[in-house]
Image (cartoon, rainbow, N blue to C red):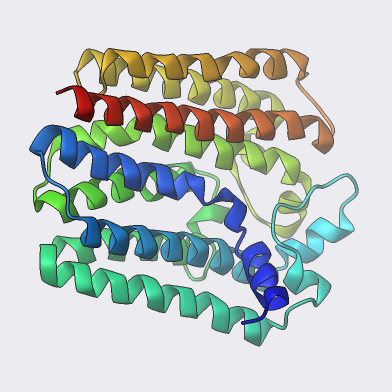
Length: 308
């Protein structure tokens, strides 16, 4: 693959947001080291590669079905709407056939990694991976399209897909055990990632509404949805405090609380109704808090593993 094609693939798959999958996978592996004194590098690398491929597949299958369902077209035709898809299908940069081939190629990579890991670590690997694949596909694909129903299904799906499943799955691959601790470990980063995905609906909720995509922002309206965004923000950091209290994270993981500070300024600048560009700083704050907070959480577990 030449550099141009690789660049297109990275943009089409929205590779830049890959940290939201990397962080929970690493946290699960670090949990195995801290709690079980166990770490298998080859299994971790396979988990890492498979999880990234699964995440990129999720991004691309979402774009593919948004295009087929007319969401991308509606976004182009709705004034002030900011699309968060790659735009390659709507603009004709990549044909639907090529885009579909790349999408399912990523799924194949994830499946191969999952099969290998299931042989070494047990059949539950396929359960975790299979649940993630079903969530990714039917988020926007018919006949379920639960991401279009506006009843909170999509938020639960994100918490599972970018929090609990990759963290618990990564831990299980290393230890062949199911434990409550990696589930708790996943909550702070999972909730922060859910906040990213929730906040991004503000950027294009009017085009979603015209295309029949009923996100919670569409169903509730800006005022109520913005209040829920603030509640989700508070829950994310309360989950971190809970994890420290329950000895899942060491106390110095509380340094991640500083990543909440930029949110106060951003929320303070938002009114009950805002143009789409006004939500860009909120998206920026969400991404930075997730990446920086996740980094602090990972470093806290690394330090704990060294000190114990």
